Length: 484
Figure 1 (cartoon, rainbow, N blue to C red):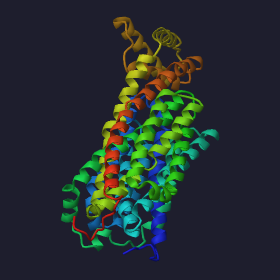
Figure 2 (cartoon, rainbow, N blue to C red):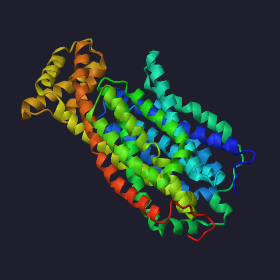
Figure 3 (cartoon, rainbow, N blue to C red):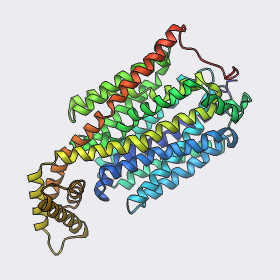
Figure 4 (cartoon, one colour):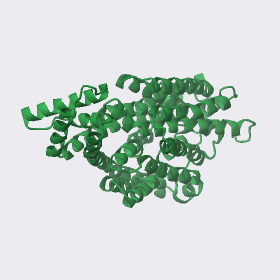
């Protein structure tokens, strides 16, 4: 039975969209402050990758724990937990004094994000059972839409001279308070599975005994890596090259939002499996372009192709599972989110950070870097503040290791350059940033290139699915009342 006409359906859908905005504002602001965190706390790319990754795999943990319990605990209960998590995680990060508190705060925020998806995906499927793929795309408009709002707000704060990363992170609290007001006291329907009398055991059976589900889980690991891995690094990588990276992220996500909102005609013309096939091809082309061009109009062109490619991945993957394996219910949708985010957070994001560190180090000009470090050590004065002293000590340690081994130590050299750039040492700081920026930009772009082969594998998987549908007479939806 459709709940589209029920008295609170519009409020529930609106509140769900705002809750998703909270998750995407978190994504955008954490992405926007990665360079600041790297400088203020003197973190390596890999450490920042773990912070960014925690903001993803924590999502997977909460999905794994709570999605199977959605039918039992109820969707409103999960959203109440997410509301508390968004508040607590943001405050932990704002008051952090080092890597571990930043990591913990990012993890709590991510778990709240996972609770939003664990509750709202089955809610949308329950409210609109005859139009799941289209409505899930329209619901997921507000992930890129929220990234646009959060990214523009962060950029506006920069333009206004408000550079504190803590203020940018506090933007998460605005949609959090809004969705709490809309949803926390509102009555919710039972999930589609509960209404159809599908028990938890039947959901597990439908999910784990269906070959298509296993294929979709494997594909979800790759589609999430292609979409969220590079998106996580776009601001920091392009800012290192001298561009407003957050604006490129806003451009990508603005296009994604518009295209998802207009998903209906696209689904009718291409079918869900046709959309996934086209997405795999376009995302690979766009990502390859982003790995080649680091600045200028070519970057925006590549970002445009990338945005068109990845925009339908996440909601269409969920839609296919909900329409083809409906008896998997909230569990099936939760498993998809779990696998996607766990892969990005535990594998893709940290691996991209490690690759970026390795290639950035190789790109550093040795003679110029050593000279800079020596000059930095020689400029130490009695009235230098703690940041300057720490930066100069790091530079001195690099010089000693270079003189001993004949090689610049990794990642200590890049860390020393970051410390010098953040220490407000006039010419030395500006030279350190000018030395490090191109290397970080290059390393980041190469990390994008390592993701491209996944698009080739996805093209083969989705081509096989699309051709199978064509041979069967077209894409067909299954109904929850049918046997699994």
